[in-house]
Image (cartoon, rainbow over all chains, first blue to last red; front, side, top):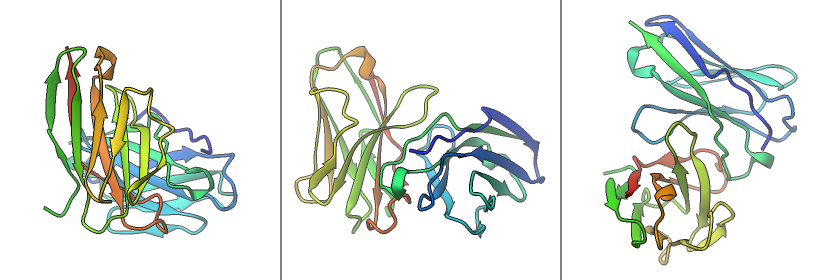
Length: 110
Length: 115
């Protein structure tokens, strides 16, 4: 898999935007960027994925830089329930095998 | 329920015993995955099924681990001669088609404790 680098932890205030960065400087042209999160004691949950264009769904927005070497997951109005570990994953050649790193532990403060 | 179901949710066993963990994927999902997660770590890939066959078992740590999916739906992860180092949460995931390879639906996991 393309190596991804994420900060180990971040925090933000409830109601504010949470911006989670991810570096994937060795990404290839056909490789997607996936984001998952894992709330304590639950299985990972798919959030969003993208290739080149920015993407938005009901959970989050994904901003991918033009050179595709980094991306940012945006939770526009973080709630306490968004406290979780967030994983940025780039499966090699967009294959089935997701390799999870250590992720970013996001703490949303009241 | 509509999600991936895993049983048992918790299993405590003694070193050397045999364990089976079951996964019921979302109906109609052809792809099924097993992952293992140790405390403080991200999930670690074990095996991937497409239909009934194991398309990739490169993540199984050794020959004590085996998984089957005989009818292309339910899967069982089997661990022989358990060791304390096998203690972890075992996660199962499924996905609908190969065209969406990275969009997996995970279960809540089976927590295995080997004493």
